[in-house]
Amino acid sequence: MIEQVSSPRALSTSARGVGRKRSRMRSQRIAGWLCLTPFILLNVLVILGPSIATFYYSLTDWNGLGTATYIGLGNYRELMHDQNFRQALVHVAIWTGLFLTVPIAMGLLGAFLLSQITRFQLLFRLIYFIPYTIASAVNASIWKNIFDKNQGMFAQLGELGVPGFSNFAIFGSTDRALWGVAWVDNWHWWGFLVVIFLAAMRTIDAELYDAVKIDGGSRWREFRDVTLPGIRPTLVFVVLLTIIASLLVFDYVYIITQGGPAGATEMVGTLLYKRAFELFEAGYAAAMGVTMTIMSVIIMVLYRYMQRRGWDV
Amino acid sequence: MGDVSLSSSGRLKRRKRRSGGTGIYYVVLCLLAFISLAPLVVLGFNSLKTKAELGRNPLGIPLSPQFHNFREAWTRGDYATSIKNSTVISLSTAIGVCIIAGLAAYALSRLDVPGSSLFTGYLFVGITIPAQLYIIPLFALWVKLDLIDSRIGLIIIYWAIFSPFSTLLLRSFLLSLPREIEDASRVDGANEWQTLSRIVLPLALPGVLVVGLVAALMSWNEFFFAITFIQSEELKPVTISFLAFQGRYGRDWGLTSAAGIIVILPMLALFLSLQRRFIAGLTAGALKG
Image (tube, helix red, strand yellow):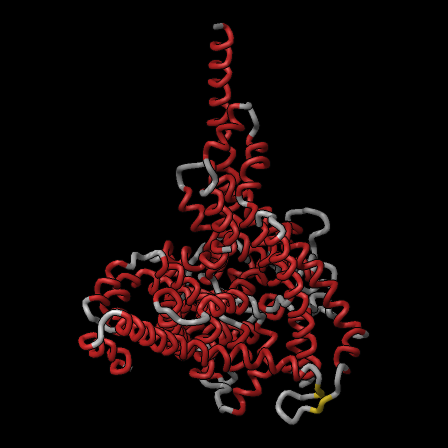
């Protein structure tokens, strides 16, 4: 590799000017492709190749290891009438709604308050960020204890005489499990948003705040009229990120409830996983993956379209 | 004149209100900090309690702290093995990602490669490809290549999935560095390899370090691929091993809490000691938006 790219040096002593420049460019090109080779090979092997293969397998009856039989759009037709899939989509919609509100509101609150103070700003930022860096398996285990029906937080409240909290199950309750799991995921996520929003808020021109202050505006008006418009590109990006991540949410649901109890927390991500790796319906699961990917592509195209239309996002 | 004095006294009043207001801010910020930290404190507390104390006092401060849970969790969960696995996986992932993404970012930011803007565009799209889209054929492929249930098989996957993001990060870092010194070295007759290793690499080291730290943290905590591709007990990384441990000893909070601390402590310590670099690296993708 070194020999190849060092050739222009030898050349340059004899031929100068244009020839030298051209060979320099060619050697750069070769070096460039050599530098990109490991990346491209790995990406094709692990991500791009299998992703494309999924589109093919979604048209087949396949157990994941044996030979795949082509069945056209059969999987997609089955998917349209699949009650479990439909229920999972409803859960994903609820999940997305929760994540578009709770963590974003908490992140905005934390970031705005931090942007208004000077002392301990970095310390608070660090504290909020810590849960994001902890392994999901451990986070889940902590909250399993805290939400435990017999000994957890609510059981303690019940013992103190707060009505309605004796035997108050979260992850074991079909009504509350989805909210409970979403809370754990939110708990590890919102601090990340604080850091992102705070960084975006720092780029806002301070004079804009002064203008509101001179008008005698309240902090709320500063937030509404200056901060929110000022961080709009970041906010829209976070909304996009939230939707795409919610479509195939997996980790916390799989770790805490595995989709239960009685399918109360079943997401498309967990359903797909079970179909592929527990029931060996890989072709059918592939169709689910393709469907969800198409949804996120539509959302991304919409985002690009809004950008093109001159929305400042 | 009357107007002026009025307005200045009004401003004075407002300033007073404002400085009084920040007290409330600290109260709310402390409340938010409590939400973040309390569960982790409970984890710490419970790791120090005996079974008997947990029965009486499941969430509060341990009254007679004991450390025996750690020793017991360490041997019963065989964390010597899983910590070793996770260390090997994290280190190899970090080093590999630095090399793979570093080379790619160098090509994209410094070398005149045709189609490099298209490539960068693919990177932006590529980081949003959901794992569920490719994991099923990838699993079949890994079975065929005999890479299932092996550390290197998992490491190769991590190299591939952490590289696009890392390449983008390093690319923008390299673009922010001045090019004059490199150009001078090229004019002096240094070849690309010499320019890369002697000039660019030392300058880019802070960026490479951030990428390495982030890759190490993400692979230490990674769950989805680890649980799918590793089955043998003796190859499991800490997160997967912890999940199995929790399934076995779930009722014994003291033991599982101690195990949880064993799992998170190495990375938590690393994160806290280099937090600025970590935070910058982990949020870089979203800030580019």
